Image (cartoon, rainbow, N blue to C red; front, side):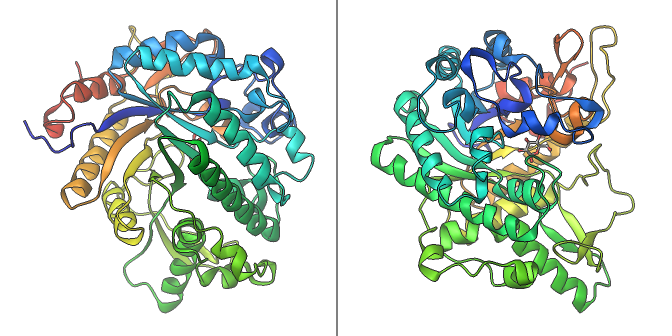
Length: 454
Ligand code: BGC
């Protein structure tokens, strides 16, 4: 047995509220920006929406039982702000809050550690109507909402995350308009980034005043690599892309400064934030969450926006259904980079997984997904290697527990370890779920030898 994963290492799966819950307006919940977005033609592939999704809101107890069967020791979920505060601020909706209290209680009863994310992209519509992530007041709105959740659940939730992937919120929601609220404006993207960092800082400060456990930030990092024969222009473009995607959030939060390259990335759209305001973004956290899916090999190209760089496909590489290259080595490298650059903080892999083509229905009761097993195995080996080299990695959450609403892709891209039939809503663990369950039972020992079940 190779004990390469430390004692207490958490073995989890991750989901997010809007992607699985369904029943978005049940029990007094207020709508989120995804309600309106989904009802705008052309925004979500196939006209899909989160109205039913995986129906987790009504099947929560069955889903927790499924997690227990798989032997998960952790579950990362997100809270839909508008269930708890239908207007985004003001009176608490006890019924909405009650759902998350029951979820946490069910997890604890099943021996599963809850890891709660406060914001995974479903902003209350009422707040978007007031400018959403562009309004300077959002830091207070978010901290007040966070305080409601700490008060209700901090006695039972040991790990909190403020915001999931602020880069995606700003880039998808305000720069390119492919995610809600669907704006397309570089200046707004820079403002939305800054307001999220202020909101994160305010929520962490609120936690310091009342919380007893640990709070962190979850970012997605995608290393920018160069192809052989890269020019100086390619190198420069890759550095800008890295600053924009990988350092725009962590540098201000942990080092108190924005990367210099952002002035060039945003050009005339860059807001000149006062120094004191940027320094105030620096707020110590207890841990960092890494969502890792892929790397990008980039080259300079004037067609890129806002960074004049585009990804280039690698001959011979495996690509997922979302067009992402399978590159586990970059997960190890990223964990070590975070460890070194940001002061050796405890790290969790809060998301890692792949959409591959899965059969749309079970065949003889089974769904075989050998590429996903390969993806998980090679990425967990990368985590193991980062730990062996000194990174303080304390847990791993596969994305995702269930096939779910993959945002603007609708239900077409399946990331689940558990298959969901979206007609019947029946859940069927895929071969990858059964493989992961075996690995968890051995606490990750002998990773290479755990064969996918026949
Ligand atoms: C997000 C998830 C999403 C996944 C796959 C991450 O960026 O946090 O919500 O489903 O990637 O695209």
